[in-house]
Figure 1 (cartoon, helix red, strand yellow):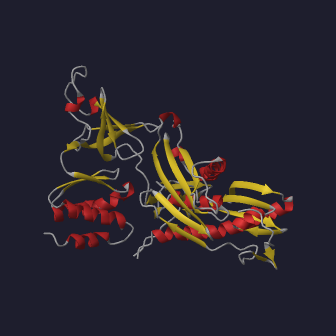
Figure 2: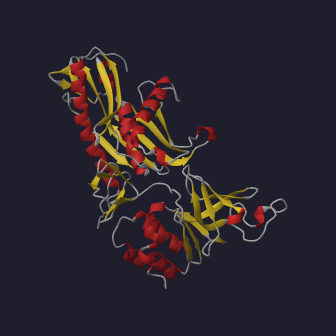
Figure 3: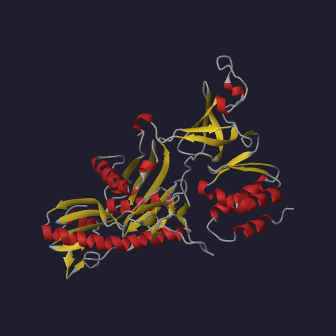
Length: 220
Length: 238
């Protein structure tokens, strides 16, 4: 089955007091798509889910980042976006650290993978991330793959159904970041990667969970 | 190619058998450069162009960054084998100018203000040149940008019009381009009916120009339909 694909500039609907979501713009009460994607039109919101594009940081997003540089009082984190983010020392470590005596690479070094939260984005897109909550952690071992960020919700599935399926069938440990980075560790990671890449390629098809279930079916 | 003395319009038929208001066979394909974020190949008759789009991505050197908006960079390049006599590679006066007009034609549709400090790169490579390369390049570039997921108001559609032996014609090929009395490069935003590129070379009366613009508009709408079909084709599941 096919979902309708809209192109930039395509007229969607009259606005009629509804909220505008991502991927649309308004001109004289009419709403147009501004990216190539799948339209979502409901009673209170109009949006288009992009089929391509880069990740733009948003406060509250959980992302997987790679430490790309160690500074005097924090770290530069690559979050798979045109914008780098900064992880300040105070947002990363709860104990007291004397920055004049300590080399911060003892906490996080270049190349380390972290699961963190976007805590601040300024108008000029200066981004700060934070490790100060229960879910944030450093990820040891494993491998990371990158997919189109807008397709992450499909990988997770409704209420986490898809990701649960992948975890169960392959026995892998999987973390997904909203920035399109997925971290996988486990015996059967090749199978998990295959499933995720299939989801990315065929995300515009309806009935994807069944297909993936069949793909992974051979495993116990 | 140089000036020829052959009659370019005989009995209302052009040198390649087209009628004055007819476009050449158009072929569009999206997603042909694997490592690019977006790409497209567009051919108008023998003119073939590959455009690829990258980004938005971080812009270096840092002094080129704009703190409140993103920037668009375009490069128009002719392959040495694209023309009859070998073109020496690298940018020259003509390519630099065309790069700029392509950028100016595309800039109005892109929401660059959503991407401060970054760049969107567009590379337009002419593989085979047979007239109207800049307008074909704009068509290909807007397809590539749409495929890369860059937020845009609309696609940009473009075509060339001109005048030969007193006849107004659409979509000039190489021979016509070199021997025309006037040629006009034209690009527009179809759904808003706004012009983003208008260049003219040669002599035209005011009435002729108005007529040509009308012809260009009509043909752009035809090309727009083809562009939309090419993009939708890419995302159709079997």
